Amino acid sequence: MPDPRRLDALRQTLAHLDAKAGRRQQPDVLPLGVATVDAALGGGLVFGTLHDIAAEAPAEMGAAAGFAAALAARAAARAIPSRPVLWIQQEVASFEAGGLYGPGFSAFGLPMGRLVVLRVMRTRDVLWAMEEALASGALAAVVAELVKNEADLTATRRLSLAAAEADTLALLLNHQVSPHASAAATRWRVCAHPGPRDAFGGLGLTAFTLSLVKNRHGPTGCWHIVWNHHERVFSAATSGGVVAAAFDRPDRTPLARSA
Image 1 (spheres, one colour):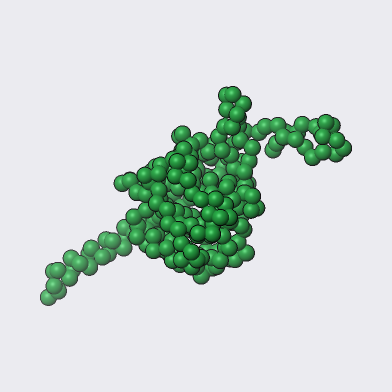
Image 2 (cartoon, rainbow, N blue to C red; image 1 turned 60 degrees about the vertical axis):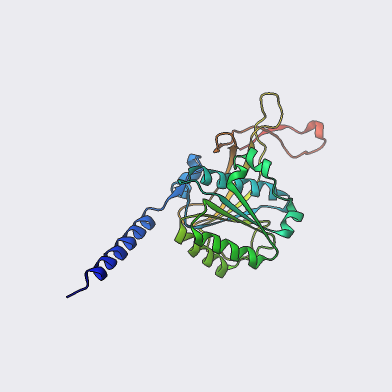
């Protein structure tokens, strides 16, 4: 006669597998809040998958890091129970693009009390730390910042598997566009976009130009979006006046409307 304890253990195992399969059939997503972007993503960025974010050019690293920080802030805000965000950075990254500044993160929408920063020396240390952090399941999001883009297909597959086990938002932040194939569900190229002015004509909200160059769940595309750090939401950027390329002299350059 079968052992009742073994039958109970088997039932619990099957129930766990069924629940896990159900989560995979209906993945949790992080909407950006911009209808056209979320429609392309099938509702938003999928938790439990890897997302690759790269600066379009070296001068755009601040914009790429800002986009990653905004996504991490949204993930942290919706995490129940409250969970922190881990940002893993190579030591050399702080010399290339500047160090991480806690009060600045707080002003941007990610409170210092929810942010853990880990600095390591080598690329392989970044990848190892990210894989271990994702496997822990204790974090709202993990951001791993790489300078030389040495995360190849094998490395990104390992990170994707680790993220899937924990249903964590996994963001691989590259200082430049990677030449390697990637197992990431989405790949983004980011640069700054002229943002709206405040009521006094000064600096207003942060704006980005997002190019989605790989999307496992739908089409690619390009969008201009604005980040509201007070509400922790994105919105579509409105068109504004931009200066067209000079054909003769600057004073003869016509004012064009942005797309």
